[in-house]
Length: 182
Ligand SMILES: [Zn+2]
Image 1 (cartoon, rainbow, N blue to C red):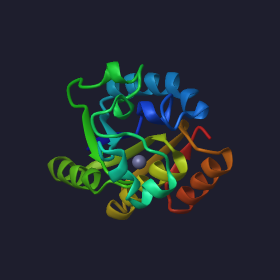
Image 2: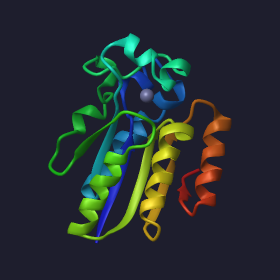
Image 3: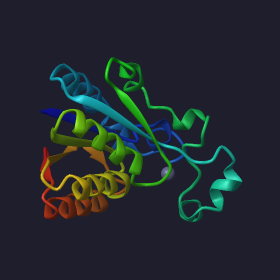
Image 4: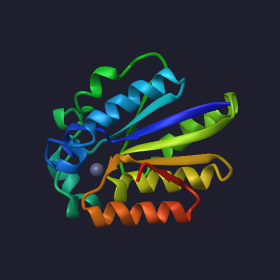
């Protein structure tokens, strides 16, 4: 049996960059510790990277571009995994997944492939922001892995607002996703 920890969008633009978020910055030390701890415990670590067009005008023509300021442009510094998490990346077994919208079908394909090699019995989630990309991916994984234990560590997630963060946790709990450290 294998265990995975998915770290959603721990990127510069969601912390210090164009969508700067003090609630996310507050979580970075805990996230760094969790990356190290879960790595030692044998979890496979997966990092998603939100990615939009290198050309800001092209981004503005997307639905997301009409509502959310430009962020995580392909090739920009804002798309990079934020320090101090970045220095922990690319250890053996770690994996990055490029994602171009909230939920990632590539993440599902990756987990399905891994599940065939060795059945997955736990998938943990951390990341930014709780009410958009964390909830989207947790529900997507719940759909494709109806019998796998899914855990969201609330202490390692940050929302745009405290209300949005709490609402997303409520929805995930209703879908039989365990919320810990709330
Ligand atoms: Zn985005």
